[in-house]
Image 1: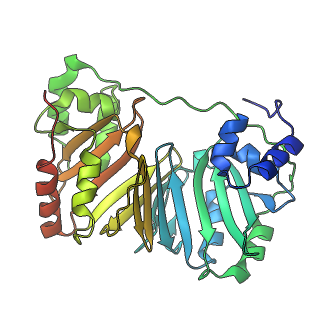
Image 2: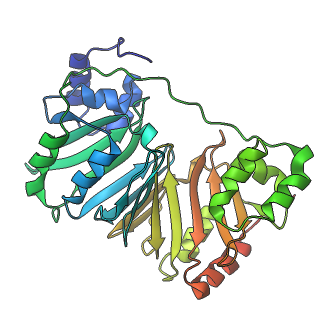
Image 3: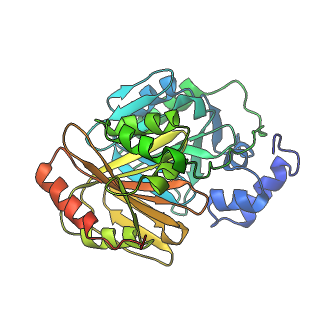
Length: 347
């Protein structure tokens, strides 16, 4: 919807009161509004509209000390605890890269911002900064922890507060997922261009030049570039990695932010359709039943082949990617052996 015209802010607040245990995202879906519109309806009641400009938000977050960074898409959520040190901004992309928080951010999708104080049952407050895109879908969220510098919170809110504190929010339409786009007639050219890659970041530029996209290219490239894996391959991999001490990389994102974990996976706890990694400073929540296609992908780099496991939903949306850690050659070799042994699909 372009404008919030089907339900009033008062009705939204009543629905929130009537469903206190329902997650904001689920309640918004139930009300057929965006999550950002749900928050906007509570402006003045623990919610403040703030500037979503990345260049202003990132320095403010760095003053909070240790926090929890959360990025999600419709099928996967990643949460990392750390600090927002080493931010580098730019007109097209921003980075936070340090020992624990590792983000790739795209400022044109940072459109709506909110500072949120949510009362807890124990009488405390759960403080967070939440960023949304033009459609009102969550791009990135930052939650304060007991170890955060809570004394910096009021200054952050005051410094980023917008003059417009209305409780309605106009949003645009949600961009549809681009389905797989390939061209079998260009298969030989695709493979020839793939052979020229020396860095994984060159891949998307290469497929765009061929007027394809990631999944479309995977479907036609063939061996040794890709191998179709069974839909349960991600679960199988996580079961093998968990508790082994083997460091891996997990990439989870949306159009506005990609969040990365580098390190081991210790505690894996499946629950219904969810595959959950529940480590002290790293959580991953993945809907295994949303996975429709899984691909093993090999791209050459100057440090050796980057071998990944990449999962897509039935619409062709990239859910999550897993890589080995090329900076640790012995660990990368173990990762490659594990991936090559996973069950593949018949041609």
